[in-house]
Image (cartoon, rainbow, N blue to C red; front, side, top):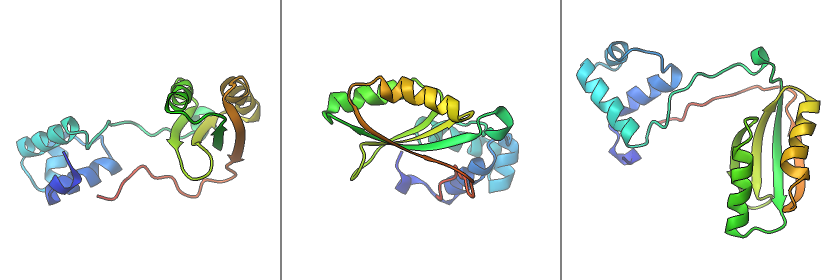
Length: 155
């Protein structure tokens, strides 16, 4: 399913689900002004088509003891496709790595990391970066205040 295949009803469904995915199908149908079977069919179609990747609960990092956010730039020594994929697999296995992006120009990767504190970050950095022979450079930025955090994509 492609974005240009979405109609106004699909877009309304997506916008509401991105704000609160806990609505029942009946509630969602009422909010977007369609019948419950129509709403269910459209949500199922968007799930199967990959428009909706998954539905999750967003947890407050402070409330669960993950108070330190780090934005980490990684540059590899060798950028061959298999070495890049190897690094991605390595960091994907780490629960504290919330996001991993290949980027250009500049570093090879940017990671978003959420940990309890600086000692936890140091342990993670040692595990993920210092012991890897292909990691040339690591540059970390530590969040002092989060003024905005959104998961919603305008559709």
